[in-house]
Image 1 (cartoon, rainbow, N blue to C red):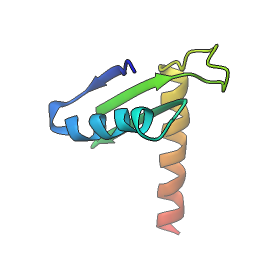
Image 2: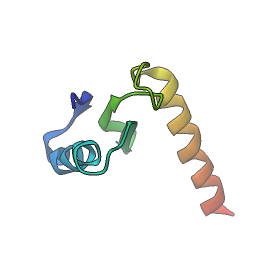
Image 3: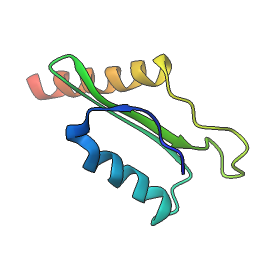
Length: 80
């Protein structure tokens, strides 16, 4: 499975675990990103968006905004 995106070498083990989800656990498609103190350290994606494997998983700004909103919402929950 080709993994797209980028990652800091300090997070190579995370990228490897992500890849194993496809080779050992039959994942169809996924993305994963981590930002530390405002700096993206890993932003990767692979696979497909559908079970027929006809639509590639796509990374990019839309996925980033959804992740950002999710993490911002966690901050709101934590602060309450």
